[in-house]
Image (cartoon, rainbow, N blue to C red; front, side, top):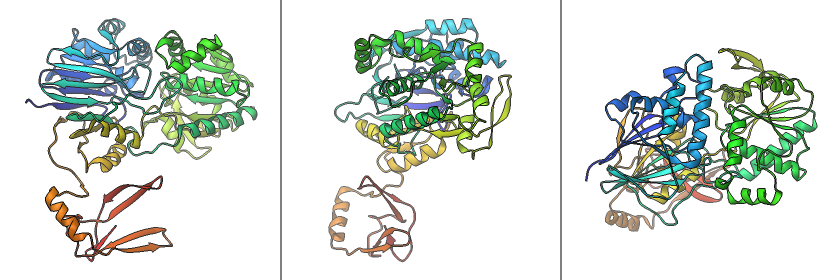
Length: 533
C-alpha cells in the first residue's frame, strides 16, 4: 500500500490563498488556487512554484470565493491541459469572481493574469453533479454539498486502497440561500480528514438570535434617520442578507427603506436569480407562490454606476447598502464607509469573517471616534474617524468548533490535518481533538504524511486495554476530595498522590462544561504534592 501525502501551498495557517496538493498513490491532485484578499501581485499568491516538483494531474475546485479561485489562471498558465472539476454553480460564479479579480488587480497596477488567460481557464472547467463518483487516472473522487456557498463542495478521494476527505469550507447550518452540509447517516471511516478551522476556537451564538438582534439594530438605525452599511462577501452572504431584510420588511419587523446592492454583489445576485433551480427548495417555493423574483424585488435596487453611488452617499434618506468587499479591502464598501462612518446616526454592521490585517478587523477593534485606515480609491489609504455605530453579527458561513468536531467524528479518521485558520484557531481546535486523532498543523510548503502515526498528543488516558481495566479496578475505591472556592467560583477535585501516574499524566486538568454536560478535560500542569482536577 503506497503512501498518501499532503502539501498546503497556501491557506494553511491563514484564511487566504487556499491551495492544497495531494500526492496520492496513483495521482497528484490540486484542490483550489486562491488569492489573498488585500494583497497585490506575487504576495497574493500561494506557493505555486512547488508545483514544478509535483505537477498536478487533476484539479478540483471546492467553491468560487476569491481565496479559493483567484489564482486559477496562474495555475493554467503553467499547466494549460489541466482539467478543473467543480459543480455547475461554482463554474458560473467563478467566472464572475475571476472577471472582478482581473478588473481590480489591473486597477491596482498588478494584474494577476490576462483576459486571454482567464478565458482559457474558464474553458478548462468541467461541471459535475454532487454524489457522482468520478474515476480519473490513478484515483476516484466524489463531491458532496458542504453548505458554505451555493455550489460549494467537500471532496472524498480514493486511491490505492486509501481514502481522504477534504472538507473545503463547510457549514452545518442552513440559511435562506444554501442548505447545510451533507453528512453520511452512519460513521464512514477514512484514512485522513483535511479540515478547515476558521472558527476552530469559537462556539458561535445561535444564528436565529443573531438574526433577531441584527434586525433590531437595523430598525433602530433606520428609525433614527441613519443609513446602514453592510460590507458583505458578494457570493452568498449578500444574497442571504437581502433575503433576511426583505422578509423583515414584509412582516413589519423593519420599516420600509431602499436596499441597495453595490459592487460585485450586483452581478452575483443576478446570477443567483438565474440559478433558482439550484437554490434551496423553500426559496424556490416562496418564489413560485409570490410570483416575484427571489432577490431583485420590492425595495431592492442595483447601484449601476458611480453617479448613482454618489447620490446614495449624499442623500438624507434612510437606507441600507449591501456592498462588496466584506472586509473593506477594496470595492464599493470603503467608498460608503469613508462618508458614513464619521456620522454617529449611521451604522456599519459586520456580518462575516475578518482576517487579521483587514480594515474590517481594525474597525471592530477601535474605540468609538478612533481612526481606521480605509482604501482611498487611488491605491492608498486614508484615516477615517469612526463615530457611527459599529457592531459585529455572527452570520458566518463556516462551522464553529463544535460543528467541525462533530463532522470530523462522522469520518473517524486516523490522521487529521487542520488548515484554513489563523494560528489561535488551529491550535485551540487541536487541543480539543489531539487525544482522539493524530493531528497536524502544517506550515505552507510542508509535506504531511496522511497516515496515522499511532501517536496521540496530550492524551487524557493512554494505556493498553488490559492495563487500563486493572487500573480502573484498583482506583475504583479511591476517595477524591472536592473543594469549592466561593471567591473564584471554582470547583477543585483533589486526587490522592497514590494514583498511578500512567492513568493520570502529569499536570492540572481543566474541566469545561457546555450546556450543563461535561464536554472536555484538558491537561495543563500538576503540583508535586498531589493531583488536582
